[in-house]
Each structure stands twice: as C-alpha cells, then as structure tokens.
Amino acid sequence: MGKLLIADDNPFIAAFLQDDLRLAQGTNGIDAAVELSSRANVGILYVTANPHQVTNPPAPVGAAWLSKPFTEPELMEALRVVEQITTTGQAPEPVSPKLRLIPRGVNL
Image (cartoon, rainbow, N blue to C red; front, side, top):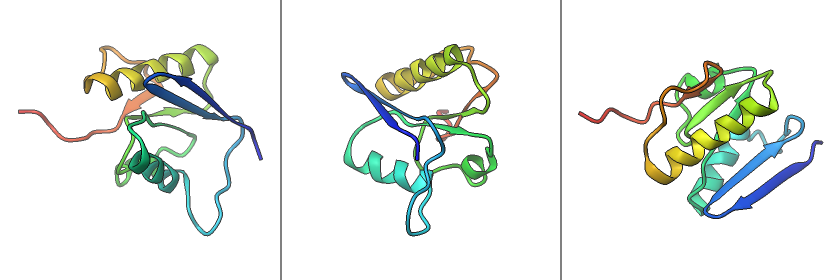
C-alpha cells in the first residue's frame, strides 16, 4: 500500500496517495471522501484514471477530479483550484484541461 501524505496548510488539508488505496469491506475512495467531509471542511480532489466512477453519477462530495497520468505542476495547480473552491466557493478561470470540476448545482 502507498503512503498517505498529508500537508496541513491552515485551513486547507491536502492528501495525496502515492499508490492506489485499497479500502476494506467494499468501500471506495468516494466513501472515504464522504466520511472525511462529514468530519471536517476539507477540499477533496479525486485523482483517477476512471473518471466515470466520479462523474456517473457525480460524487456526492468533492470539488474536482484530475485525470491520470499527471505531472507535479498539474497536481499542485489542481490542489490550488480545490483550495480556492473550498475557501471561496468559486473556481478560478480557466482551469487545466486535465482538471474537471464536479458540478454542484447552478446559480441563477
């Protein structure tokens, strides 16, 4: 199993899994994200090679997903976007083509 690296940069917490995480008892990364978001106001970025798992249907929590493979600068930019969404409720424009925002409703 990969290492879970957590950087605490108040008030934003970024977590990165070096390798894919295998969760017990039939749970998945979305389940873990739901549990984490129920305990703290954190930005959630999904990193996946299978975006359909996050988009169809849309994950109930989380700001965006980043497609694999990606570079370190792409990851850092994605984390900055998620941080901005988490702290301000607004995404910057434009965002990287590899980063997809998860729709959370429409402001009319």
